[in-house]
Length: 450
Image (cartoon, rainbow, N blue to C red; front, top):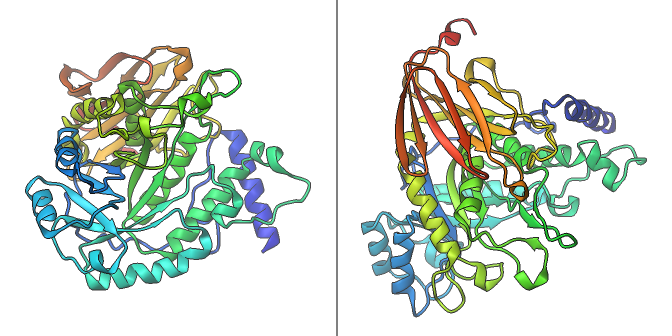
């Protein structure tokens, strides 16, 4: 076993230098479970928007009105006063779902507004076996109610993940990071989850946007893209959907560092499009009202008033909702990061899983640009998500040209606007932290030769 783990380590090392990352499946001897892919009480073919922390308090009537106005579809972490049948009736009438607390009262409900159970947040690997059994029991009670388990991000410690790879003792701490150690231990963690839990979704919270405490400059988590890539790869390999909890709040501004307030549309838009590039089927904002961040930074502050974060989320939801149905018709094949060696490229510490050539457009750019590649589930259509990956601190725009072989026309969804372009070539200049969704009409000639 020791030699196998050492070998896996050096395989990851080679991948780290070559820029092509190693896949999740096979990271351990545990065999992943293929997802059952059950039918749930929400539209699984549509991009969904949710929030963490939607408690029922005295001002609940106002909070739920603002909830709907923000373009949100569901909520997780619903403490406070107990939700009643009348509450769930209102939710169902308004197309809103709830992941209810893991208690006997809520688990006894069969209401259509109960999309699932908020089952477990950030378990270690030693909890996976018990969670797998618990998930089976929940499905036996109600096969259409999803038990939501949210995984740790890649920056979790060995102790949190419950993974202790047997690696050469001469490597320690910062040196291991340089040799792709974080990626290795995280892939092992995810593979162990896949092997133990028959779930149809992989959910994760990744908070990538920081402020350097010493310099005051904006920074981005260096493994952000690789973290999403590992989970997207796991989803494709086992037939699961990816859900991403984004940073919609932050640490106290007086602290001078840490996770920054994400109260601009630019920050929310960027996180969303990067998540979409890896095929995310749900964007979940943390947090709506109360939660684990500075209380003034949530969508609703501690005084019960809407904040700039609320309006930023609302604006971006309105923009992306224009193509939420269309996006759901496509399946993700991975993402490509162009110019990842650019010193101003955000979140590009490690390479990404290789994408087959037939799925990729022909891209010309000097800027760091992320490209998520999709094909239509039923039909020969293609779609792409492009995102400017310059660090926010630079403020730089990203110009690129993409050619799509065989395309007759392109449809570009940008900030809520729709533009149709004849031909097979797209030239855009993305603002800092901007993303776009593009669909391609026309047969791909590479399908016949690849």
